[in-house]
Length: 305
Image 1 (tube, rainbow, N blue to C red):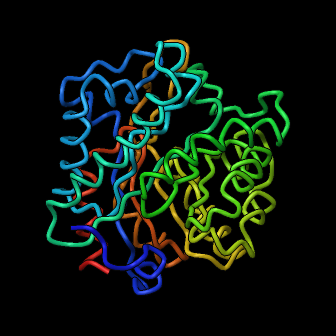
Image 2 (cartoon, one colour):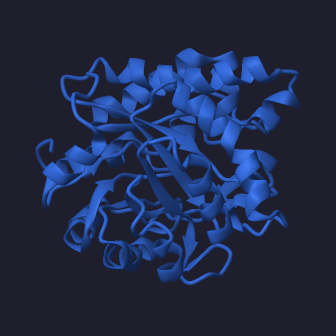
Image 3 (cartoon, rainbow, N blue to C red):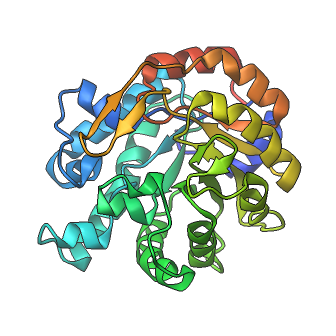
């Protein structure tokens, strides 16, 4: 059902429990038989197969997810323009990503929040750049890139913006500037490797960008190895004093050139107990974490917040 309170209020009410995010959208779409080899990735289905996106969201609702992240991670005006979709059409598709998630959440007998995904600049390039950062663009240039998409997504009235898979502090600063003044609640989530951002910056400095920013309702990490998330949760809480969001991937490694995942998975839903004790209040999974793992995670979290 549509939430009756802001997500920030739910995080505050969660106490030592946590609010459950969904898992990877792309892996669920592939499990449904969708071809995601296109440069637009799951965003292509906003135009070509919206019913598949709704079905993927619904799978996570059934698994116990309380927050659905939209299919807009790789959806940009520039990417759609390469397919001949003009600005008006691109704005409609971005809004559709919010509408599809909202429709899936309405079938639940509990509050389901919609988080509009704002992925990094590198996701638009579709060459693995989001795992490196440092694109050679200034903070101001990155802000100009992100602002139109942010505005289009906000026009569709999501409950929160997910500024996610951020690889470096320059992009984090640009994203925070792009949302400044909108009044919209956001969470800021870095993709990390070890104890650093993907660009090699110390995490305490990265997290500190969110400290004192009232628009940021949670800060943390996603799309990283589960073992890297453990220490990051405690650090994010201590640096910012905010609720922490954590949703690592399966532990497999993305081969950008081969466009496939390699290695074995290490995601363990039982980790949620340690994350919660360290300050995590939004917990879920990213790439290659599916409904089965989210159901196990929801079971470990306990009753709804």
